[in-house]
Length: 51
Image (cartoon, rainbow, N blue to C red):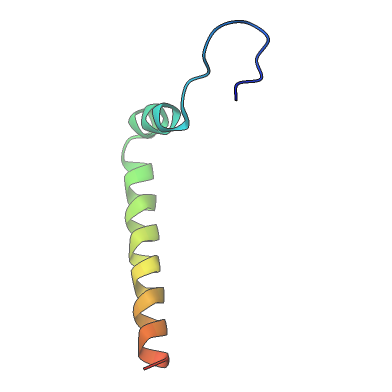
């Protein structure tokens, strides 16, 4: 799946995301928490509307 001409394997997206998370520190954790809360709120709202 890697389309780089040299023989080195591309780093996986998980590794890149983890490195990015470590570098950015608390910001991405805050964004992750906000995203999780937003998704949960959306699911609860849909469940409430469609009951």
